[in-house]
Image (cartoon, rainbow, N blue to C red):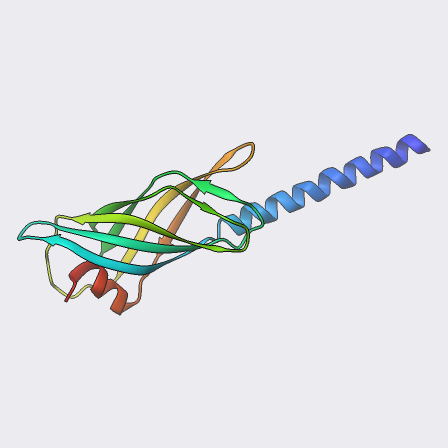
Length: 150
């Protein structure tokens, strides 16, 4: 009888940990990102370079550390530039501001119908690591400031 109670408790413990682990994985997949700052550093006829700052919001209970993150800016279904973000740590239920750079070879000032920022961040957890894709659609004003600097 006692061994069946121990077995039942073990099964409940494993089931509980599995549910908790899955819920945290699902939460980590919902990390929010937004543009908090964009500054034009250099611009000529062919290229533009920016300093940027993105804000990441962690809805999970996990501490996640991310290495350098490469991201891409896509406008009207065409990649117009790419950038890198510094390494950072996201604390549970908190946000973090991350600095980076952005470079584009496109200096087309045509109006963009849609702009999105996409990338994959590799988060190192205690015993594993997960790749979390992110897609962010900036507002019209943010897109204009971020890409055109008008």
